[in-house]
Length: 176
Ligand code: IMP
Ligand code: MG
Image (tube, rainbow, N blue to C red; front, side):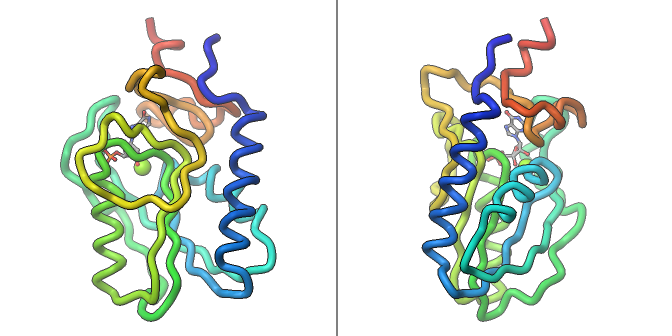
């Protein structure tokens, strides 16, 4: 099995990013918006490592993928419910490719006049980027030499499967 990001590396990077978030938002209260479904494990691990800051948690559920393909149309399955106006908002997503998803959510949040908005992703597949979205916190980067393959595990799925893997690997490890 060719593991792309091991359980140990994920744990190390999640802790480092949570420390950075804790220090940047020290003594402030943040509204964290997780993007479902893929980010549920990432969100749970990040928030359990936050210290010296308060936060409330909300979620937005989106659907833009069918199997391994982006439908290029973002469908809002359910919206966040917290009032965003005047608050520090941190959006957590599983993986950014084209940037279409994060661009959509960021604009949605900004339209509700927050005090600030930042974004945090588990994986940045930078070679696929089409939209210029700013990301303040990147846990893991898929370097160009890793290819642009579809990845699964640690919350990321293929047609709803593989979310429970403790590591992240390419889907083709399973489907040959
Ligand atoms: P983007 O809108 O092109 O940036 O795609 C981001 C969204 O597509 C993510 O929030 C994921 O839900 C999904 N996605 C993109 N690539 C992968 C992948 O390799 N594995 C699992 N989901 C992916
Ligand atoms: Mg997603």
